[in-house]
Image 1 (cartoon, rainbow, N blue to C red):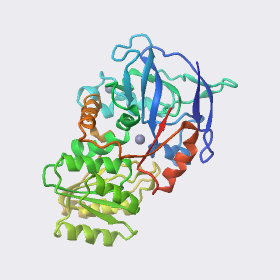
Image 2 (cartoon, rainbow, N blue to C red; image 1 turned 60 degrees about the horizontal axis):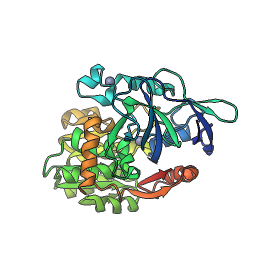
Image 3 (cartoon, helix red, strand yellow; image 1 turned 180 degrees about the vertical axis):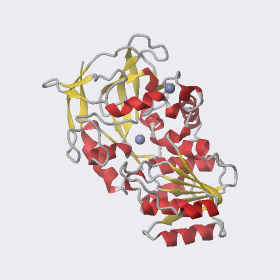
Image 4 (tube, protein in one colour; image 1 turned 45 degrees about the horizontal axis):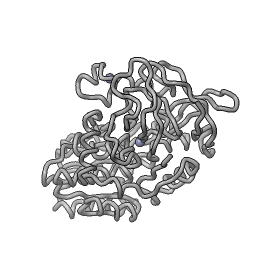
Length: 375
Ligand SMILES: [Zn+2]
Ligand SMILES: [Zn+2]
């Protein structure tokens, strides 16, 4: 079938929205009509070329849509189902899926190749048949996508997919970091470094967990205003002076530091933001690394002696350490009840044709929490 998709041919060159031929779903796959997709910062790594990816590729990994057709052997979704697409698959069969770590599923090893699970593509440029690469099995910057059954979660059909799509990556990652990985208990304190879509979701998670102090740190005042709206009790503008930020955190916590810190900076992750997150925590505190920085970075600006002397812990968190097949329906329910606020997370809605503007807005840093493309 023919559809439109946004294709990245070269880093830093505008994406081309054009006609693409899509093959029918094969065994274990479904054809999904995309309804909405968030524009997550992780795509930008490939756009800028800071992370390499097989090109040309259809990016996008925070989508939601409606199943139109299923391939052979598909049993967990059927035509008409509303689904949130997850940027990580979960096969339900491997060691990791069976030990409650679906974010570590062995299928994840196949994501990097840029194809479907069987190592082939379903997308070809319409004008000449040129093969296009998939992105994280979901390629959501397209009107339709072929997606493995392992990468989708069925959600109720009466809630807006242009909000639920955020559960496919950013919201679940941030909210899960606070509630699954940190397990924040009532009254505990947390520093959140970086208040984009993920950081703001973490603020919501910390608030719902009953955190006593939620200290939000960002370079942009606009994002701190949003953080306060979602429940941050204190905000600190990072003027690129780590000592100054550290001093403020010490004052807010009576010289103790926070129980947890979470680093969400991702694209602009630097020694500075990591240093803030490490110094923010108290003796025996836990720093969670959630944002994905440049793959080329090999060092942490952390004194091993401080790590030992202060008995600190550093913990990597992937996709909010979520049990996403059960957590996403739970979050959907919380959104329905008004406990989770997705509506204010979406600061702008756009069309697929606006994808390049959306990317520029992300790169500008201060313009948006989350942009959502509606099809
Ligand atoms: Zn993402
Ligand atoms: Zn698995």
